[in-house]
Length: 105
Image (cartoon, rainbow, N blue to C red; front, top):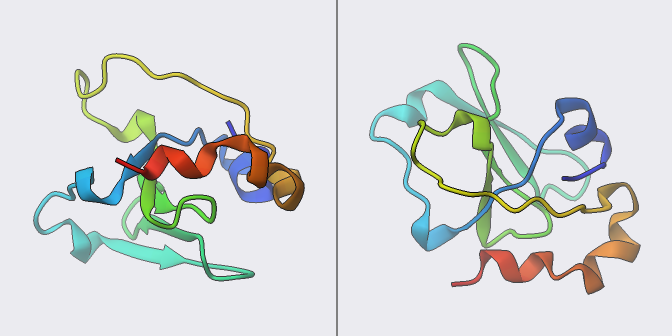
């Protein structure tokens, strides 16, 4: 659970998936657009039709994706462990948080 300005307003919970395990349904690219800011490392993907952010590339894990758990089909995930991530103080927190290891296989 992240408290940076973007995630806080969206009430986003990171579900980190390594890039090699991430699969996008064929044809969905036509409905997606991308938003970046500041360092341009984080890439927030959103639906052009409804505005929902189903996944994004987080600054903490540019080699993976953070999937919006509520956008997954029922039964896709059995259990999710939620850990606090101080995105509001990213520079001080990320080094010792262990979050970067979550996108590794």
